[in-house]
Length: 133
Image (cartoon, rainbow, N blue to C red; front, side, top):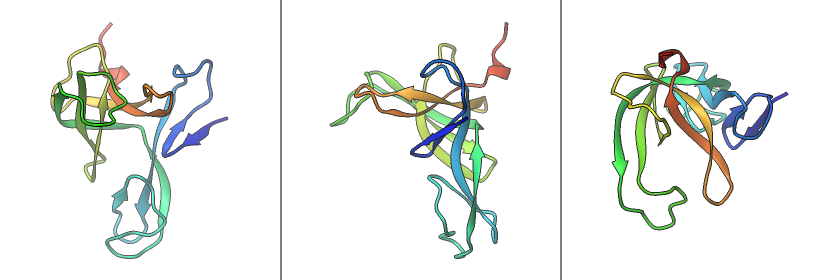
């Protein structure tokens, strides 16, 4: 069994955050193959209908550390954010949560992330297949 919270699709499993993520719910245009996140029913480029799809991995295109809290932030300072390229067509900005250093070009995967107010969102972490023994 799986559930969708916002546009995060999480697979069944034991526990809360420990469940294996399936990915982000994105839309793929039938006409021009454009990808959108969050998912939308109609393509903004050509007006065609879109199909729902899931993206669970991407490539880190850039990142930075946030050292000063913007107003209303729900993440503990400092934190890292990155731009992740999905299928060479879609860039998504998101939190980076990892114990190991990341580099531009590394493969990352979607993971659930609990914010300070208790809400569940998504973040990116080093892909498990890229992590050594």
